[in-house]
Image (cartoon, rainbow, N blue to C red):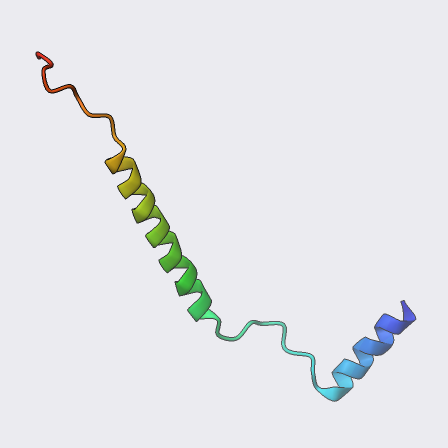
Length: 60
């Protein structure tokens, strides 16, 4: 426990401790949104292509 406290004090003294808030990072958020949309579209397309077909000689 003492070692962790010492490292924390040293990091603060060196100015390496941030404000606790993530700056930027929206590129990763949009990349995740984009990949999610692509996966959903491809999955929907695969479901549509594998849908059961009605027999051609069926009478209604």
